[in-house]
Length: 603
Image 1 (cartoon, helix red, strand yellow):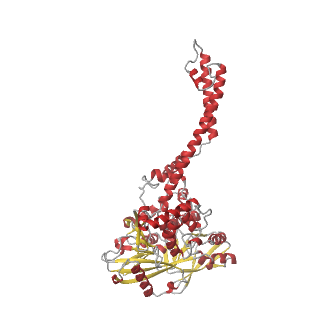
Image 2 (cartoon, rainbow, N blue to C red):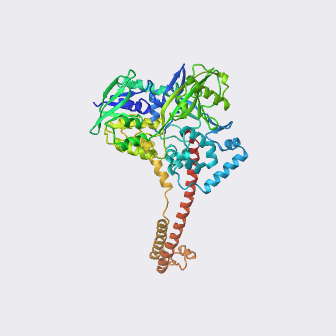
Image 3 (tube, rainbow, N blue to C red):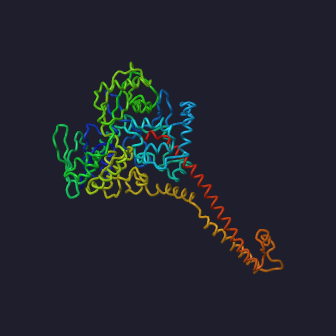
């Protein structure tokens, strides 16, 4: 039986190991940290638990939703959501609500926002190359400047004009007409997995003790099935020959170098680090391309407060430009069991940095003081309530989508495709800003490929990612053909209903039926004969010039009814196409408005 080495015990790596264990394939997961979960870990400090950022558990992929419930069972909670934007001393509902936003901005600012939006609609940017152009074309410059620019630039550390439009295209996919119609007509019906649709605005799933609980439980299940996770081993060298990885060398916490052999390797380590670890080294252009891929770093300043309630939100976006703080998590509002004492509160203050920034190397006490000072400045806490704090740093947290990343990534991918027993998955493994469910789905695909499947792990988080699951082999959790058929039938009905009618074709059809029908009706009456032939049909002479129930009238009726039918069919088709086109535009705009409401959650 083949053996598999998995680099990294985050959601992607552990999901791959879990899926392999169900397929009867053994694996060894090597994790550089002393804790599993990657960015989805939960840190425990004095029995206060906190995320590395907030992690809502939601997916459009039924397989992933089922996996979460399978792994965690009753410890998977359904939680209410509240999030707001803090901007210049005021709170705004998020997702944005027009009346609330305009009331908070005031009449003059609202007028400016309206004029800016109108200007953009009259003269939009003809080409969308950057995130800035993408958002401005949809919101107008002033609303973009207030509600998106400051926060996004805090997160990414660069002007929005330098962020590739690919980031927006991936995080907020273009809406199809089919999806727009489905959202408009079936928004209160059941989703494809049979569960009732619930708005992301209102609630979300969350593990009782934080997201790390999911991955610690997953690690335990994998171990029970005979596979292993080895923590504290950092992969430093990957020896390959003749298009295959032969072995890996990892350094443990004691400084010892250990060799690991395997038939297959699944990697979630950052692509830049992977290329640097290859032995022999790749060609110089590949190394240069990998080194040009950039990563945004992240740290959380956690404040422990002796207050039962600070604010009601799960999290708050900080758009105020006078502070470096980007977002605040209120962990007790995610799950009450994230704190050891309900009379206390823990807040996570999120700062997005480059590892070259001076704040990255500041001592813990200085960072805690910074967090207290900024939270006090914007009026969220009383510093006298803070009784302790800690700091967690996460290097390479977010792969950066600058204007050059696509070309560099393509160069690296072309080279790595020559190593046939190596698969790349996960956010850093693919240099793709995946959600947790996307990383998990890539892990499932990678595992199934080792059992004979033919899944493209790079197709996840593209326009077809949610259709891929129906093409997989069918273990217990995969949708069957019977389950998939209603959704496919709905797709066909919607597409057929909105298909464009050909005016000429419909005109010819109606004209032919009308003309031939009138000719045959006249001929039938003439052949039948009688003292008075076709008195009722003769009334059509009021509409068709010269028509009578005679053989010459039959020919004349054939011509005139054919011409009239063609004209009627042509006009009806043109009108029908125009009305449905206008209706489709309205549906798409309605669906696009809903999709854009949670734009910041995707930043």
